[in-house]
Length: 292
Length: 193
Image (cartoon, rainbow over all chains, first blue to last red; front, side):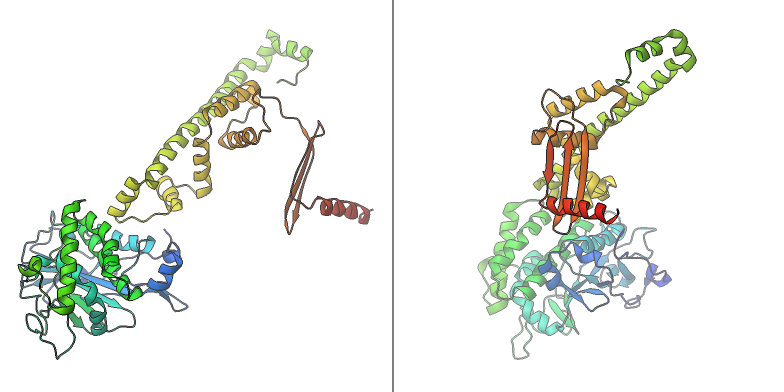
């Protein structure tokens, strides 16, 4: 195998369930010294998604996932290449947290990230480690050269799709304050302002989307990764692009998410448009009123 | 064996000679080797068809959708290496083999059958044969190829020049630097005398 090989660290604590906030720190998997890992990307993608400092290639975008479960499959609690560790979670049971992962276009390097997810199936998949409505799947992103506030400001116009996809979580008080992803302290924050339980919470240089629902399968996790890549890439590299263009790029991923159900995807895309308008100017269309 | 004189053929048919030379056994094993070469070749042909079918699926919308759904991102070269364990040169050779028309394969096999044990039945030979048929240098009646009496390869910086002259006086020239090649030959011979 050419290129980077993600390996276990051997740190025992990564294979144990720690108390809340007691898990080991995540590693940054967003770097590789090997040109092979990016060789298959188109030149434009290499320019826009990768940074080279003379020694290593770094992903300009990174992502991390929190996977909450009621129970973890017996014998499955051990170190995984994907996870920095496990911890107990008061709201639903347990949480597995990934290392900082590179957020990349399709290619060999991304396949290696998906391979880590595949190897961790016994933790991720509900068939082995069940979850219920109390569980969530927070997703944290970062962009090189931007802090969390800048990222939230940039991405909010494209975040309608997230509200549409996870609309059933929009009345959950653990993730619905500042529903319009506003930065300004002069704003009337929709659903008020909570220092933690926001839709998209700024955490230093990162932005944590708290609305994603529980993770049920490896494929679902891969689709979420792909979706977030498209939205982040579009936000950063196509800042003047239209929302319609973005939704067109997302459509194949959504079709995969909804097993080819065109009607369902059309509905979600329409809701995304309404949520976009809501985020930008506060207009609440009839079709989204029930969710917020 | 086609180069034998009649007297030599008669000698090798003599029962005493056959026994002394153990020719029966040798012929059986030679046939077996030829047959196994033939079998290996036929298996290669069959393999090439399956490889093409697999690659067609890989390139198809259905195939790409499936790869995408499973989070896999492969180039054609990745496909060759990861599915078959082959370098891309061999893989593309297999694909070319699958595309050789069946009538050309029949012609090739007929020619190889004529040569008998001397035939080097192989995918490489088939592809060369197919190329010649395509370029019209191999007639459909399977005329024997004239022997090459002069062959020259000149690696000029501007590109390779090749020259072949067969026993019938037919000249096959590729490249545009034959004059330079001839000058080089003359100068080299003169300076070595």
